[in-house]
Amino acid sequence: MPPDSFTDEDSPLGENDALDLVRGICFKTGPPRTVGVELEWLVHDLHSPERPVPALRLHDAFDDLRTLRLRSALTFEPGGQLELSSPPAESLMECITTTAADLDAVRPALRTAGLRLSGLGHDPWHSPHRMLREPRYDAMEAYLDRIGPAGRAMMRSTASIQVCLDAGHEEPGPLGYGRRWQLAHLLGAVLVAAFANSPMREGGQTGWRSTRQAMWAELDPARTAAPSARSGPREAWATHALDAPVMCIRADRGPWSVPEGLSFRDWIRSGLPRPPVRADLDYHLTTLFPPIRPRGHLELRMIDAQPGEDGWMVPLAVTTALFDDAEASETVYRTVKSLAETAGSLTAPHNPLWVNAARYGLADPELHSAATACFAAAQEALPRIGATPAVRDAVAAFNDRYVLPGRCPADDLRTPVTGKDLLS
Image (tube, rainbow, N blue to C red; front, side):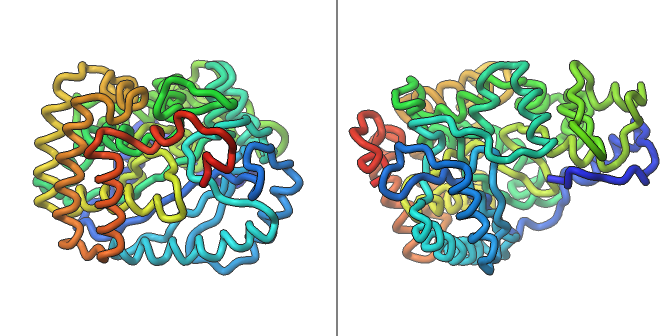
């Protein structure tokens, strides 16, 4: 995110200027070559994960982590979640190798502090206090509190795997950006269901396989829903971005104001309390949380954090194979297109298909059938995109354990006894 201080040297934005900027930066087209991943982790006590970790202890441990030499960007979320964002890689295996090496450095440093990374989509025991005290997080919390408690829980208690893929070719076809944008929205519910891993909150079952995804559906749909599909991706996203409510107005000093009912378009037109500039638009785009966010590349945001030290590799490998292998992409597009056509007109994540994915996982028969086809296509494609036998074996093991029998990782957490049992 941008720094908390800023200079107002840019000229005020006009409405057409803002639309042109968003159209220009949201989809950077070309052959799909690079892949990245953003891994969020909950941080728990190594021996008693049910016990809340004091903020001071987390601060001290995170200060030590900042001294590590990592390829990935290391950041921290408001509730003390740790995030590693890989650099763009030229291949799936380069991305996995780089990220795994960074995790191999982070984990021993945390163990020295008596802490561990936990691959869960939502903290199953407690809602941490907000650790980061900065104007932008103060403003975000104030904005989300107007909607309900889900916003605070999302900020403090959730963790995800975000797969980042190139937008694709300008031209139509399986690897064209328009098809990939559509595929991401159609496939998203299947990814939610297959990798659902957050069935608990405050020590009890919530009734959802992905409590994390259910929370996103509770937030302001103007901020979290996919844009309308009535126009092309660029135009749809640019219109959506300008019509979305402004979360906050940055200030050089003191708290940031949190307007009510002010879209970015209205802010441009009124110029109050001050005219917005380019930096305001850039920041506004970071406060939009649709399931697929165009940031030049496509950022897929619907996958829960996964169990085990290497569980994150499976959704990364499967998603990359289904998008970057032309044969798999075409096969899966046909599969999920027919699935989504029966789900109604609401956009993700409020579409009934997405709701069923979060509540039932692969126990939903239609999602189970689609996931089976998607994983079969991914397994065929992985050798073609250079996946090693170890990665292919990990995907096959996940398929056998979860997908084929209609289960998801959340189903392993339905009746935990202790924190150690839950995280073993």
